[in-house]
Length: 78
Image (cartoon, rainbow, N blue to C red; front, top):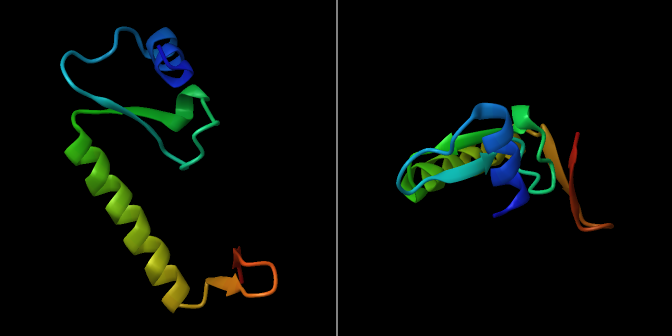
């Protein structure tokens, strides 16, 4: 069993029945703090949330809140 699943089970009780996905809210797969984990009912729900995050980031780029630094090839807060 994956570490994030073990952490979720320890802090929140039994894992959901059926198919589910444990989502890292801040997107950092190594951040397994309980407050960063949420159980989603399906892979479709997980894809929807990931798409929503990508769209939000795109809007922040358009608004100039996030920039792409061509020198170091990284996104940065402006």
